[in-house]
Image 1 (cartoon, rainbow, N blue to C red):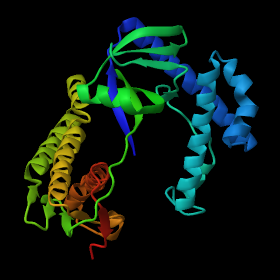
Image 2 (cartoon, helix red, strand yellow):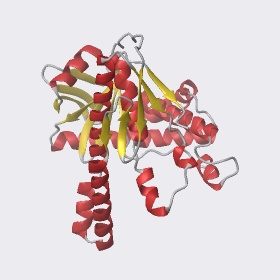
Image 3 (cartoon, helix red, strand yellow):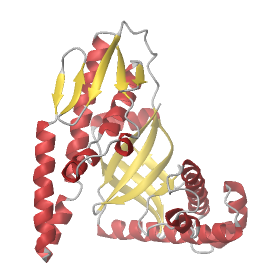
Image 4 (cartoon, rainbow, N blue to C red):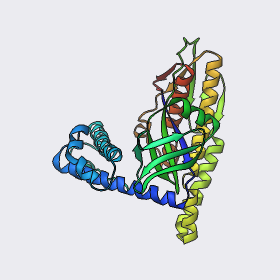
Length: 323
């Protein structure tokens, strides 16, 4: 199974500037390739590479970064086609769908960029990387990670790594192909009921309360409302500082709950039965004060965490209709 290991680059000012310029150029090249794909209708990976490779390379990119920019564009159009087919951008003929179909895919100047082993090399023992930039190859860039992450990178890292600019820092997202534990034959199933008041309730009687999470959300909602009403520079600065904190707290809570559920299932050789809550937000109509609570309910994330942790542990997971 594939897992992503995230490490933080500890770059100095000069390295950070070089990496930012590299992302900017890569995404300018991707936007150019996207416009050409849109106007010509050539959106397949191989055909698009034949069409725009020389143009993209002439913008100042080396061979491998140029190829990855083109592949990024082809992948974006493939994803867009799937989303359009699934109706994610509205029904055929809708204004929203027409707007999406009527313009090329655009990339932010600091959007993530993939690098393969020719453009990015890892030195796990010394905790450094070497990466191609528009100013040449930079070596000895330190990164921070845990001992467990370093062990996984050394043993299981495969394929590309993404360079990501987030929250004023650079990160590398490395894909690791981790061997999957053989799935055992379950001696019964533990049902897990997902909720808002209680985040998860297991059929063995274990309850994971959502009281603290909901208190944090309500407090942050009131604080954001006050700061947005103020509109001062200091209020906006504090809003930026608070950005993402609630999501990180909720994700950490879901990680701990999912680990507890999977560990108990593994100990008792039980499988895990989860509710399939897909589409619940569209099915349920609530009063206005309750909608925020429903739409900040991270049941899908908790289900995904349980599923991948169970897969690593060899515990079978089934999804059942909650009705």
